[in-house]
Length: 393
Image (tube, rainbow, N blue to C red; front, side, top):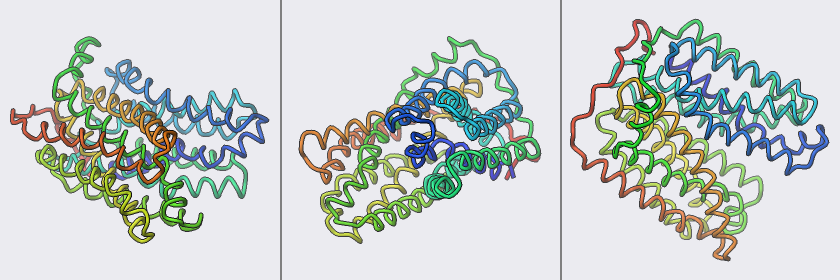
């Protein structure tokens, strides 16, 4: 049951992140600031997620996981409620920073809880379900949040998010088993483990893969309008198809056994590279372009949980939270680099159709790194915490 609770928590936390994008014009008008100023709320949020995750994880490494997860969801609930009640830009900024800190810590702690709550052979499934909440937030949370905001005002959207996070908090309090606290380790020792070649290789796969993916996805709407010639309505249909693809990729990731991840990862990353390389051929034909967009989402959300699970399996229990948090931070940095890369392709005049092939270079390098991981044959350490009694989903 706890895996389903974590899914709800993940959906709430991710929706809190994404929903502001569709509300920026309303927020700017109501708080009497410019749209670019309102957009800085998104930037500040991502900075806290990227930097705050590893720092918060180190500072809380000695706390019991169940209680820490509950505290994190309490912070998410309270911050969303504070966003709903904000009457000024500084108030909303403060509330958003609270939500960002909750998200930064949530993914690390929830990944630990997910892996410790199930038998070893189901750990990839547990982590995939956790990331499934993020996938669903792009399909359902963002558009529904925008609709609620349009109908009842943007504070109502944040109030709804707060209610959803509160449901997740209740679920944690009722269903989360007591997870053994990781053995205490010093900050220097924990950070030092991040510089092992295997960990650096896994983090490189995340950075390179998501840089290429985000470069293409950031500009998917201009691609579909200018190259494919789709109307705004069909662009929306394409984005729904992309969202469904992310769910499919997430479900597929859950079927991969932890001990086979290193062999499956190069195939998943390579598939994403091929989809990006094929963009100039796929985009001119509308049905093919829409199918390609769904496959793009499927490939990306197949890779992400696989890398997260594999990385956490390469370190001892005392460092799993930190490596999970750092991987999420690297993903955030990849998002910034990817958006800049896609913009650079347009700035030099190559056109939207060529963002995919340029972005594929980064993903091809990630494929080579993943292939190197697959060739490694040293036995993996037995780092799995014993499943907590009654914790399996």
